[in-house]
Length: 252
Ligand SMILES: NC(=O)c1ccc[n+]([C@@H]2O[C@H](COP(=O)([O-])OP(=O)(O)OC[C@H]3O[C@@H](n4cnc5c(N)ncnc54)[C@H](O)[C@@H]3O)[C@@H](O)[C@H]2O)c1
Image (cartoon, rainbow, N blue to C red; front, side, top):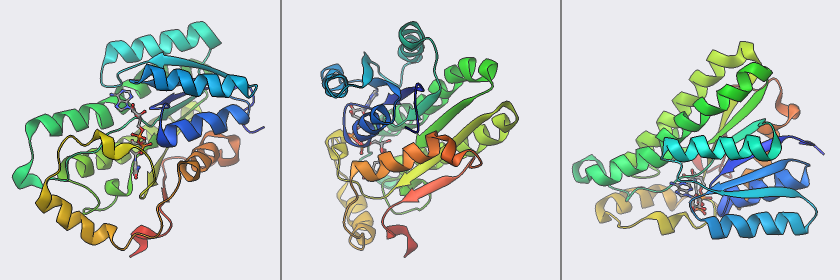
């Protein structure tokens, strides 16, 4: 077991790659905290893990609110006494709009959920990681954080920010025994399109030129395996990287 007795918080753990990561981490011996806006979904995942003999709990969290994040860590420490791994996975799509058509509302919402959350949760995690001189953060970015044409302007800028935050955190805290890496998934079969309340047709047409050359979509499990590698001691000398998991899509 690669994560025996480790305590892992997984945001957005009720669906998609967060769900797959929660189940895989529990199989690998971790005590898993499934943190999601969707409490019913998070509870279902926790129950499935427990009925398979694993250890899990569900917490209702809006990752864009500092108060909710503070409560998430309080609950985790009260339940499992420590925290070792933070997977900043919760995220939403934008509407594919380029800068000419961007709405303030979507820009702010995408940054709140996809970027502010990573900063706030990582900041609170440091309160545990620094004194214990150990801890791992894995940020779920996107190929949209490495390229210009995979999504709209808000999502692209937000995921670039996540990758920048990953590198800075890795650099700043390497001497303290803390690692921080990112994963850049390509197109993965999840429920994320449900987070799009509207679609900008011009932006969609431009992004589709790139998505048309994507190989078969990946599965949530493909990302969970990458998260397991980056969270375990198998990657103990890996710090500050962005691991692209996209079936080769972005090599074009
Ligand atoms: N699916 C893809 O193709 C793809 C590609 C690249 C990156 N990503 C990234 O992967 C991550 C996971 O997405 P997914 O594809 O598994 O999507 P998903 O929609 O299946 O799962 C996302 C989960 O996050 C939760 N969530 C959303 N907003 C939240 C909030 N404010 N607070 C707490 N929880 C919240 C949702 O309830 C859901 O359970 C996201 O960061 C996303 O940007 C996805």
